Length: 234
Image (cartoon, rainbow, N blue to C red; front, side, top):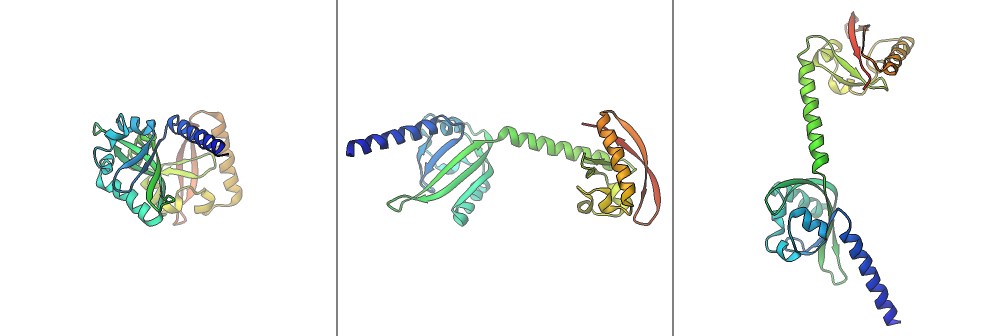
Protein backbone atom coordinates (compact mmCIF):
# COMPACT_ATOMS: atom_id res chain seq x y z
CA UNK A 1 0.00 0.00 0.00
CA UNK A 2 2.85 2.37 0.94
CA UNK A 3 4.59 1.51 -2.31
CA UNK A 4 1.48 2.39 -4.32
CA UNK A 5 1.03 5.68 -2.48
CA UNK A 6 4.67 6.57 -3.03
CA UNK A 7 4.36 5.79 -6.74
CA UNK A 8 1.18 7.91 -6.98
CA UNK A 9 2.91 10.85 -5.28
CA UNK A 10 5.90 10.55 -7.62
CA UNK A 11 3.61 10.49 -10.65
CA UNK A 12 1.76 13.59 -9.43
CA UNK A 13 5.04 15.41 -8.80
CA UNK A 14 6.29 14.42 -12.25
CA UNK A 15 3.10 15.74 -13.84
CA UNK A 16 3.30 19.03 -11.93
CA UNK A 17 6.95 19.46 -12.94
CA UNK A 18 6.16 18.70 -16.58
CA UNK A 19 3.37 21.28 -16.63
CA UNK A 20 5.50 23.86 -14.84
CA UNK A 21 8.45 23.39 -17.19
CA UNK A 22 6.44 23.55 -20.39
CA UNK A 23 4.29 26.64 -19.98
CA UNK A 24 5.35 30.13 -21.03
CA UNK A 25 4.46 31.83 -17.72
CA UNK A 26 7.13 32.17 -15.08
CA UNK A 27 6.06 30.16 -12.03
CA UNK A 28 7.67 30.73 -8.64
CA UNK A 29 7.49 30.17 -4.90
CA UNK A 30 9.35 32.56 -2.63
CA UNK A 31 9.89 33.30 1.05
CA UNK A 32 8.57 36.87 1.48
CA UNK A 33 11.41 39.39 1.36
CA UNK A 34 14.12 36.70 1.27
CA UNK A 35 14.69 34.13 -1.47
CA UNK A 36 13.08 31.97 -4.10
CA UNK A 37 12.32 28.37 -3.15
CA UNK A 38 11.30 27.32 -6.66
CA UNK A 39 11.18 28.82 -10.16
CA UNK A 40 10.46 27.11 -13.47
CA UNK A 41 12.51 27.33 -16.64
CA UNK A 42 10.31 30.03 -18.11
CA UNK A 43 10.95 32.23 -15.06
CA UNK A 44 14.73 31.86 -15.38
CA UNK A 45 14.60 32.53 -19.11
CA UNK A 46 12.33 35.55 -18.61
CA UNK A 47 14.83 37.23 -16.28
CA UNK A 48 18.03 35.96 -17.92
CA UNK A 49 19.29 33.65 -15.18
CA UNK A 50 20.63 30.12 -15.64
CA UNK A 51 19.77 28.60 -12.27
CA UNK A 52 17.89 29.11 -9.02
CA UNK A 53 21.23 29.43 -7.22
CA UNK A 54 22.31 32.30 -9.47
CA UNK A 55 18.93 33.98 -9.03
CA UNK A 56 19.23 33.82 -5.23
CA UNK A 57 22.65 35.49 -5.15
CA UNK A 58 20.94 38.86 -4.89
CA UNK A 59 17.79 40.25 -3.27
CA UNK A 60 14.47 39.43 -4.94
CA UNK A 61 13.65 43.15 -4.92
CA UNK A 62 16.17 43.72 -7.73
CA UNK A 63 13.77 42.01 -10.15
CA UNK A 64 11.51 45.07 -9.99
CA UNK A 65 12.29 48.04 -12.24
CA UNK A 66 11.62 50.48 -9.43
CA UNK A 67 10.76 50.62 -5.75
CA UNK A 68 7.28 51.86 -6.69
CA UNK A 69 6.60 48.68 -8.70
CA UNK A 70 7.75 46.51 -5.80
CA UNK A 71 5.59 48.41 -3.32
CA UNK A 72 2.48 48.02 -5.51
CA UNK A 73 2.79 44.23 -5.26
CA UNK A 74 3.74 44.25 -1.59
CA UNK A 75 0.85 46.54 -0.65
CA UNK A 76 -1.74 44.35 -2.40
CA UNK A 77 -0.37 41.18 -0.83
CA UNK A 78 -0.29 42.83 2.59
CA UNK A 79 -3.87 44.05 2.23
CA UNK A 80 -5.61 41.16 0.49
CA UNK A 81 -3.02 38.32 0.57
CA UNK A 82 -3.25 38.11 -3.23
CA UNK A 83 -3.08 40.08 -6.46
CA UNK A 84 -4.41 39.21 -9.91
CA UNK A 85 -3.03 40.32 -13.29
CA UNK A 86 -1.25 43.33 -11.82
CA UNK A 87 0.81 45.06 -14.51
CA UNK A 88 4.24 46.25 -13.38
CA UNK A 89 7.67 46.80 -14.89
CA UNK A 90 10.32 44.23 -14.02
CA UNK A 91 14.09 44.15 -14.52
CA UNK A 92 16.18 41.40 -16.10
CA UNK A 93 19.70 40.35 -15.13
CA UNK A 94 21.11 42.66 -17.83
CA UNK A 95 19.08 45.56 -16.36
CA UNK A 96 16.71 45.74 -19.35
CA UNK A 97 13.11 46.46 -18.38
CA UNK A 98 9.94 44.68 -19.50
CA UNK A 99 6.22 44.83 -18.73
CA UNK A 100 4.73 41.89 -16.87
CA UNK A 101 1.41 40.76 -15.47
CA UNK A 102 1.76 39.28 -11.98
CA UNK A 103 -0.68 37.05 -10.15
CA UNK A 104 0.40 36.00 -6.67
CA UNK A 105 -0.97 34.73 -3.39
CA UNK A 106 0.35 34.35 0.15
CA UNK A 107 -0.05 30.81 1.45
CA UNK A 108 0.78 28.89 4.63
CA UNK A 109 2.12 25.35 4.43
CA UNK A 110 1.33 22.53 6.86
CA UNK A 111 3.99 23.80 9.27
CA UNK A 112 2.62 27.34 9.23
CA UNK A 113 5.47 28.74 7.11
CA UNK A 114 4.55 31.65 4.85
CA UNK A 115 5.27 31.57 1.13
CA UNK A 116 4.29 33.53 -1.96
CA UNK A 117 3.16 31.46 -4.93
CA UNK A 118 2.90 33.36 -8.18
CA UNK A 119 2.93 33.46 -11.95
CA UNK A 120 4.45 36.10 -14.21
CA UNK A 121 3.47 36.70 -17.84
CA UNK A 122 5.47 38.92 -20.19
CA UNK A 123 3.02 41.46 -21.67
CA UNK A 124 5.56 43.86 -23.16
CA UNK A 125 4.21 43.56 -26.72
CA UNK A 126 0.61 44.19 -25.66
CA UNK A 127 1.58 47.08 -23.37
CA UNK A 128 3.69 48.79 -26.01
CA UNK A 129 0.82 48.42 -28.51
CA UNK A 130 -1.55 50.03 -25.98
CA UNK A 131 0.89 52.90 -25.43
CA UNK A 132 1.28 53.46 -29.18
CA UNK A 133 -2.49 53.44 -29.61
CA UNK A 134 -2.93 55.91 -26.76
CA UNK A 135 -0.30 58.22 -28.23
CA UNK A 136 -1.93 58.03 -31.66
CA UNK A 137 -5.31 58.81 -30.10
CA UNK A 138 -3.92 61.86 -28.32
CA UNK A 139 -2.21 63.04 -31.51
CA UNK A 140 -5.46 62.69 -33.45
CA UNK A 141 -7.37 64.57 -30.75
CA UNK A 142 -4.87 67.45 -30.89
CA UNK A 143 -5.29 67.65 -34.67
CA UNK A 144 -9.09 67.64 -34.44
CA UNK A 145 -9.04 70.30 -31.72
CA UNK A 146 -7.12 72.56 -34.10
CA UNK A 147 -9.99 72.38 -36.61
CA UNK A 148 -12.22 75.50 -36.21
CA UNK A 149 -15.48 73.65 -36.96
CA UNK A 150 -17.30 70.83 -35.10
CA UNK A 151 -15.97 67.37 -36.00
CA UNK A 152 -17.23 64.03 -34.72
CA UNK A 153 -16.92 60.29 -35.30
CA UNK A 154 -19.65 57.70 -34.70
CA UNK A 155 -19.39 53.93 -34.48
CA UNK A 156 -21.77 51.45 -36.12
CA UNK A 157 -24.05 51.66 -33.09
CA UNK A 158 -24.51 55.39 -33.86
CA UNK A 159 -22.65 56.40 -30.73
CA UNK A 160 -20.08 59.20 -30.53
CA UNK A 161 -16.57 57.85 -30.05
CA UNK A 162 -14.53 60.93 -30.96
CA UNK A 163 -15.19 64.67 -31.26
CA UNK A 164 -13.28 67.91 -31.03
CA UNK A 165 -13.53 70.89 -28.67
CA UNK A 166 -15.62 72.87 -31.16
CA UNK A 167 -18.24 70.10 -31.08
CA UNK A 168 -18.41 70.39 -27.29
CA UNK A 169 -18.65 74.18 -27.44
CA UNK A 170 -21.40 74.03 -30.03
CA UNK A 171 -23.66 71.80 -27.92
CA UNK A 172 -22.39 73.18 -24.59
CA UNK A 173 -21.95 69.73 -23.12
CA UNK A 174 -19.15 68.05 -21.20
CA UNK A 175 -17.08 65.31 -22.79
CA UNK A 176 -18.46 62.69 -20.39
CA UNK A 177 -22.05 63.55 -21.29
CA UNK A 178 -21.44 63.04 -25.02
CA UNK A 179 -18.98 60.15 -25.15
CA UNK A 180 -20.62 56.90 -26.29
CA UNK A 181 -24.01 58.63 -26.58
CA UNK A 182 -26.36 58.71 -29.58
CA UNK A 183 -27.91 61.95 -30.87
CA UNK A 184 -31.20 60.85 -29.31
CA UNK A 185 -29.55 61.11 -25.89
CA UNK A 186 -28.11 64.61 -26.18
CA UNK A 187 -30.06 66.49 -28.89
CA UNK A 188 -33.55 67.99 -29.04
CA UNK A 189 -34.70 65.92 -31.94
CA UNK A 190 -37.72 63.80 -32.77
CA UNK A 191 -37.34 60.05 -32.82
CA UNK A 192 -38.51 59.89 -36.45
CA UNK A 193 -35.71 62.24 -37.44
CA UNK A 194 -33.23 60.13 -35.48
CA UNK A 195 -34.29 57.03 -37.39
CA UNK A 196 -33.69 58.94 -40.62
CA UNK A 197 -30.16 59.78 -39.46
CA UNK A 198 -29.52 56.19 -38.46
CA UNK A 199 -30.76 54.82 -41.78
CA UNK A 200 -28.39 57.24 -43.49
CA UNK A 201 -25.57 55.98 -41.26
CA UNK A 202 -26.33 52.37 -42.18
CA UNK A 203 -26.17 53.29 -45.87
CA UNK A 204 -22.79 54.92 -45.36
CA UNK A 205 -21.39 52.01 -43.38
CA UNK A 206 -22.62 49.54 -45.95
CA UNK A 207 -21.09 51.35 -48.90
CA UNK A 208 -17.54 51.10 -47.64
CA UNK A 209 -16.67 54.38 -49.37
CA UNK A 210 -15.96 57.92 -48.22
CA UNK A 211 -19.01 60.17 -48.21
CA UNK A 212 -19.59 63.79 -47.28
CA UNK A 213 -23.06 64.89 -46.17
CA UNK A 214 -24.63 68.02 -44.76
CA UNK A 215 -26.72 67.56 -41.62
CA UNK A 216 -28.76 70.10 -39.66
CA UNK A 217 -28.48 70.17 -35.86
CA UNK A 218 -30.07 72.23 -33.13
CA UNK A 219 -27.68 73.66 -30.57
CA UNK A 220 -28.33 74.17 -26.85
CA UNK A 221 -29.55 77.69 -27.66
CA UNK A 222 -32.19 76.39 -30.05
CA UNK A 223 -30.28 77.59 -33.09
CA UNK A 224 -30.02 75.39 -36.18
CA UNK A 225 -26.78 74.92 -38.06
CA UNK A 226 -25.75 72.89 -41.06
CA UNK A 227 -22.71 70.70 -40.35
CA UNK A 228 -20.63 68.83 -42.88
CA UNK A 229 -20.19 65.20 -41.85
CA UNK A 230 -17.58 62.81 -43.16
CA UNK A 231 -18.14 59.07 -43.15
CA UNK A 232 -15.78 56.25 -43.98
CA UNK A 233 -16.12 52.60 -43.12
CA UNK A 234 -13.04 51.15 -41.45
